[in-house]
Image 1 (cartoon, rainbow, N blue to C red):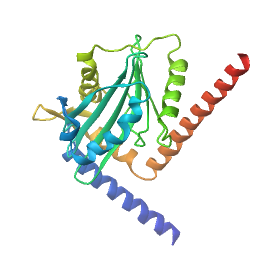
Image 2 (image 1 turned 135 degrees about the vertical axis):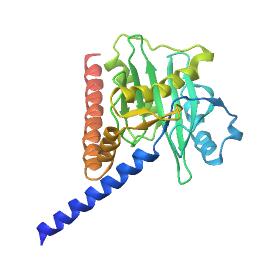
Image 3 (image 1 turned 30 degrees about the horizontal axis):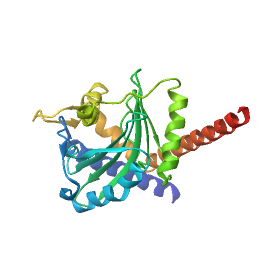
Image 4 (image 1 turned 120 degrees about the vertical axis):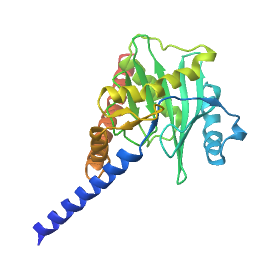
Length: 256
């Protein structure tokens, strides 16, 4: 009886994996170009502007100046991306509110980021969604979706800067190049995944589509129980990082 149950469960998972794989392979597209268009806050969709209005004042109270609100267009098939970009001219740190909108849902997350002369980019954000593709080796990302207080998140980001970029001063951008920094990161997404075998240029030449390898691995990582295991492992790693930062802060106070 139990053997039959597990066989049936395995068969269902296999069929589900195959169906999602085929759907992803045929429908997923990522834009080859990113056209960031400045948009006044009042001209944005209501749900998007609502998220920006809710969080922008708190970011500005932390010493960040608003660069602007931007419509990044349809980067991922079936969605539209928006970003509110900020910069602290004293520390050269950046902050952003990224929003992804589809017909079913509009969601977003906040991020602090710093760029360093050695090419390292350090990101600390509240995004709860783990990537289903390989990380960019030049970007070190820490996700803490449970942290709601922006002061706390910024403090953690600065502690991470001291740990992973000791002695380095973050690099800023000239006012006209700040949004282009984001555009370059977005436009590097497709070519980077071509390099690791996850994507290939689509027939239209304007977007990237998944390879069979990419579709298979993305589907595998996104399905239960692999998805659950990945979340648990990552949460444990982030908790360990926080505990290490707290221990380091106590040690520094003791030495002072």
